[in-house]
Length: 179
Image 1 (cartoon, rainbow, N blue to C red):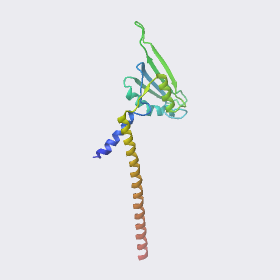
Image 2: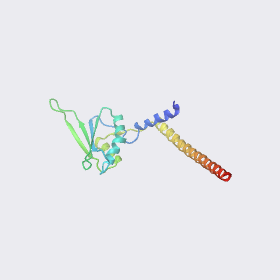
Image 3: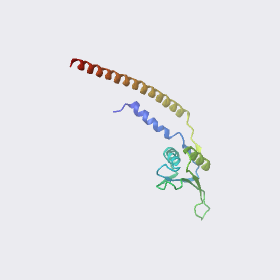
């Protein structure tokens, strides 16, 4: 069984879904978000792809009631759009009053797309609490210690391999001189 400290460290990496780019609370009038972009990242579809991979999970975590759909096409030259559907209160006896805002994502970085979404929807970014800040600092310290341990272990293994190579070379020279 894996050490409990190692498992907890990996669980804490899941902590990143609560904070970071895309962690925002959308207003109540946002009913649906739809992304449409190509499967490959050529021709300006890299930013939308990264937005989908990094920011959308955080948005969904903080806004589970908002429907978020993604349509990935094979048309590389096609548009990359983010469509936000706002649903307002409809007057009695009429159909739903829905407003649609389209954001062009093609040839844009994920941060630009996120900033434009926050502007269009007037979403409120989620800030880390004091406890979460402490946890983030502890995780950063642990990561720095881990990097130091990796470097020390790499140097140890290099020295061990060097000594094994020297020993093999000495054995080969002794057996060559005896023959």
